[in-house]
Length: 607
Image (cartoon, rainbow, N blue to C red; front, top):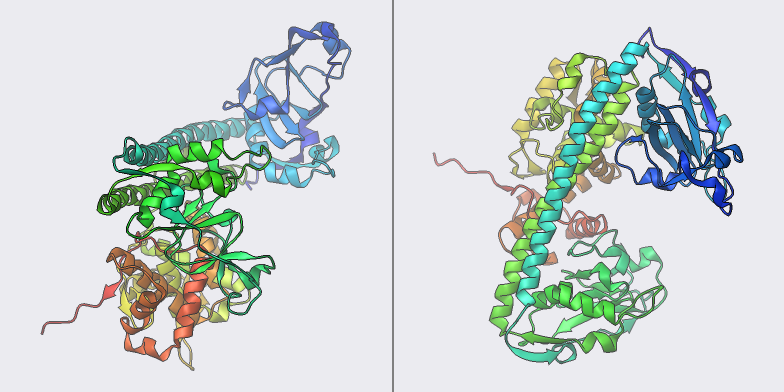
């Protein structure tokens, strides 16, 4: 914080006012000329400024309640249900008892106060108390400390944030619109496939069935199988999340056994459209139907998309009954009537939709990543504003859409230093050497989707781009950031340099757009030793290669690609390690989809 800034309490720089509500049954108190706002109305607003409210009070309503009007350019904060909604009133305004009014004194600018409270909603929530719902008391609010720069600097900071947030809002709206457009394109093509379809008409019971039997998940032969419930399935997606084995979940009630020929349909809340095509054998809950298409008549992929179609979903919702927990029963499900073209036409249609679905998935990742980056940028700007780092006029001209060059040696060095810092915090820094660092870089690209500029090849130690990492190491050494030093027993240790702490602190701003995604990848590998990290990265890359090459990524195919077809040294690692990596990938929902970079063998010299 700058030397000319002061730290004061809210009570020292504001008058804090409680709200109130006149008796609702007295008509004379309502529909007058005094504006009166509630937390519910505040939560619906897009603009921070408010001049007109849904309900108003009369002179009598104000006089006969504690709803004291605030002067214009005060800040109103919701203090319960929830804590943290904020508005600036541009006209005199009252509010109910779920809010606190803050009237800034002469040394505090209203917009600076607004942004400070916005940046500290998490802190305000932590100060709330109450069993039924949290409420922030006036006393706790008054005790909150706020950095107070000179008034002109407050105005300058507020203007910078105004301009930056306007750009962020526009970029966010564009990303959300593009995301919605990609969804609409998929929905449109999916619907067109099933509208006016030719072919023989069948009831669903004629062309698919539930052949699976209920088994005891406690039995040894089933205990290590992954379990899928409705909560593990993602709306309108093949994605499965947070998978665990029957043993890990401690399952005791009967479950259905399914295989790779099954389509899973969640019968709870059919409007959620949760359907999946698992590529492994496992167990599913009794709230999921394991449907097996009749061979020669119904293609599995076609059935999958049929169950995702609007026409089927409308039918399922119509017959789902129970208002509290809508559920599709078997009789209604199998009574659905559908026209089926011949099998080859089904496969052709399914392949076309699959292509659109994959494209939608990739676009969705791009837009969701951008939305996360914009959200992170917003928070970063707020943090800088109240630590005295956002006072330069150059900040006004900052391009919101500019992203730090993730392919630079500095960025890769920052990722490695961030990974080491997290390993050290977990007391696992002795496991973090050059091999594990290289695997972190690969997974940051392949899983987090951050392009570091690598060109990975099949190396004895897994997917590798040594030249890329060396450039980052050279840059780090020149800056006194860090170096990898050889151990006497083999391998390398990460050694912080003289400027490590200083450079690491500034790295968080450079990584901010992707920091959360990078952190998740690092957290996955922290518990692993070097070989486990090597096998994980290798299996992930091999799996991704198979998808790119159009090969079905079965368990045996993945292990063969990662072990037999990778490097001779991989044969020295037990196959069980590769099976553990496959299970780890599924359980942590980092299943490859073919979007990561292909990892190929090094080109042999012709001379």
